[in-house]
Image (cartoon, rainbow, N blue to C red):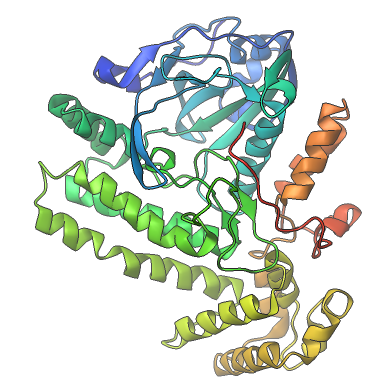
Length: 480
């Protein structure tokens, strides 16, 4: 089959970084869903059968590739040594008019040289979660990998129970992780590390100096995590091998969108000490950057690396304030903005409001009218008498008056940045259950909703409000 030209540049790096792999196609595979990236990547010339065949590893396209990459990492703060793509296989890099360079990778097509004790397979449950959440995050404006297609097979995979096999096809400019640099540095592969640095610097950072590149990586990481915090997103497994050099949200495992606002919320039940709790994510981002910067210690002085790393808290704070200023509909930058935001987060924690619902309701707030908090009377009737909420709204009202805020204009702006819908874990579970039962309409329908999360979608409005207590704040496992 023909295809727009591939330009597989990662495989021009030293062989230390990758291995050729033969995929294990899913049995009697079905293409469950595909996104508009099929068109954007130039794949629309393929028939659905041809597309499924290639993505499932059954056929080849001229110039494609089949490689998995070698990287290392710190997992839960402990050096884990070599890890690598245990079930991910790169199918090739293409140059697109709309998206620039994009790599296409299949996740779940069998064992690779880096599978360790794993089977290289993925299950439908985790594949649906990653497939939908990546696209949802992109629609929220959060840097992330993207989803191209979801494939279901008839083979059985054993996890806590027997599940359907599946594969997610994901897309990104590059999957280079902090762990790729760690692998070379801690293996003493100086020439290989230099090649990786030069490749990354020239191809993804416009030939910037090494220090400029590290500053950009730090800034991208700080911005990504600030955006996570603003929507209550908890990654769950912020190991260095899951950190993108391009500041992309990578590897959706036991993630969760926080419901009742709780700074100490943990979404991964394997995280017994709360290392990756919601409130810890900014700090862990800095810790992971330090592990990355160590890999450059032969090229940049320790003093320079420390000085650069110490600018991270200020960069994160800047991104966080900018993000919350938009969420609150504020047009002007003022010195007291940070205090207003900190008071807001304290109030949310005290009142335990649903994170997504609160900001969507606040988007319709009319200055001076606590009753205008849309839906609060139905879901939080006692909160309208809450002194904590009233005190914060008074401060907010004073801030709006200072800049002459117009309710209608502010509301329109806020509704465009505060989503009505996120991929709540119980919602994901309902989609998984329906799809497993052969009812794929839920998958397709919710894909459209999550790609337009700021629109009203009244037909599924029950998923926009606070969930019943038996459904919310679920904690998940790493099993996939």
